[in-house]
Structure formats: structure tokens, C-alpha cells
Length: 82
Image: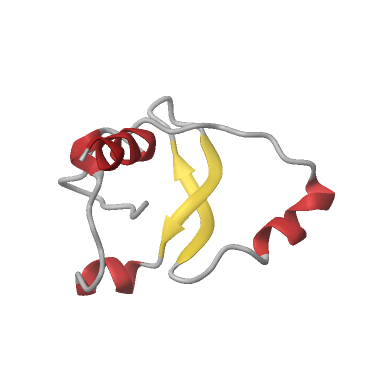
């Protein structure tokens, strides 16, 4: 997910709960350009979630914008249907 000030769109997301003591273990499996950062929700609240480093998204190299699908799970379902 890449935050944009204008021209972006909301997508559906899943909110999961993880014990704090397991977070470090989980993080070792997240490879660049993915990271964990602040994701703002429509109601003004926020959660920590997957983000993409901005320089990668701006380069356009190897990046696919999935916003038009409405969310990651929809994107994956569309790939399976192909």
C-alpha cells in the first residue's frame, strides 16, 4: 500500500491481531520493498499494516497497482481466475 495525498482510492483490507511478543519473529519474513507502517482507515483511525516503500512505487519497475480490484484478496482471486 502506498499513501497518496490526492488521486488515491480506498481499498478493502483485513485487520488481524498479533501478540506483541511474536511481532519480531513475523517481521523477519517481510522482505523489501514491503514494510509495516501506518494505514489510515476511512473512519479516521489507523492500524499497522503492509506498505510499499514509496521509491519503488514511484519507479514503476516491477510494480502492479491493484487499487482497481478493490483490495488484495480481490486481486488474488482475479489472478486465480486467469
